[in-house]
Picture 1 (tube, rainbow, N blue to C red):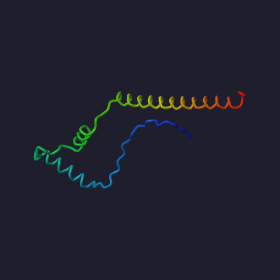
Picture 2: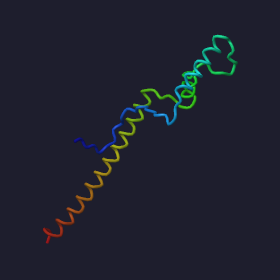
Picture 3: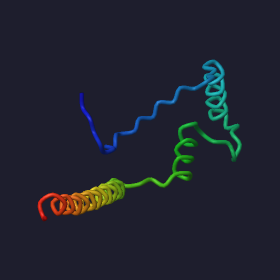
Picture 4: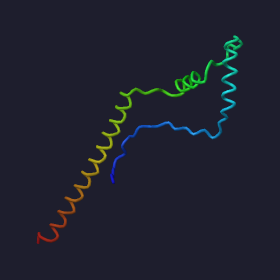
Length: 110
């Protein structure tokens, strides 16, 4: 069993399970769209395909971060975590030294 005190970033997986999906309706709409394209009956405002619409939504709604930006952000978080741990250890060491001096003075310095 593996224990970890620090949060390690994991890859993200998109696994959407639709609540309701009508396969027959989707096929029918796709067939109608294809027929309209062949006959030239598509209006100006209609989308050509689902994939283009989905891609456009992702592009407009979310800023795509490069690998460099993600790596820099994770590195910064790691450095901050390290600094916090070092500060806690320094405070703990000071407390132990101070309490050790008091204990020594109490028992051995008479």
